[in-house]
Length: 69
Image (cartoon, rainbow, N blue to C red; front, side, top):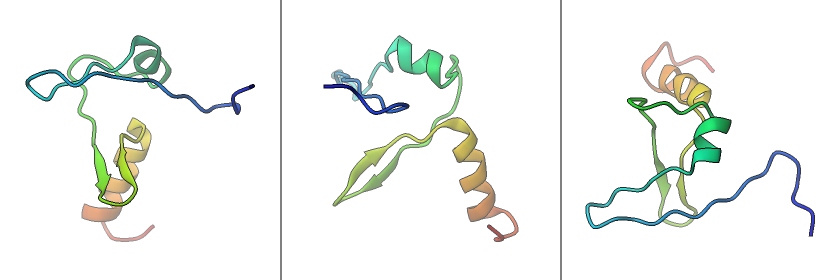
């Protein structure tokens, strides 16, 4: 089965302290560097998501900025 272009899936293991390791391929693809801050979004029905960094800035601006989309 061929995967859809631009779609990825990885598995991670949660450690005893609740930490996860982001796979190297994902860190490289999304330019995640040591010390970066990520946002984790959660919905009890739909699950969790970690959006890419550019989206974080946009959502932050919408929530805390001038309120315009």
